Length: 112
Image 1 (spheres, one colour):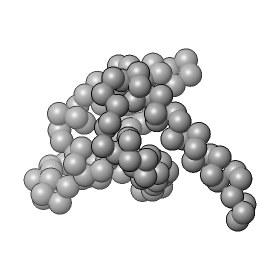
Image 2 (image 1 turned 120 degrees about the vertical axis):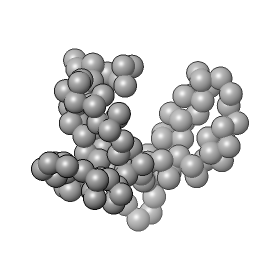
Image 3 (image 1 turned 30 degrees about the horizontal axis):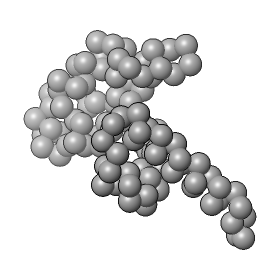
């Protein structure tokens, strides 16, 4: 999270994650850094939680599908899915090439 840059901001305003990220340690870290958590509670935590229920923005959570689809598209590229490139620089170049290929496929398809 310390390496993320969004324009002038060094950290995002909110972070979305699935129930696998619903841990008190993660939520505390996000609160300390003034980052909103868009993470649903696990069912085992709902019964143990004391006090008011944790805030959860369903609309913001539904926007995660954009990222999930992007990752799915990237996994279509076998070279990325199997982590063929071992050096980070080469891997990043292949990610950029895969995204460019996806844009060209969408932009020049017969259906568009």
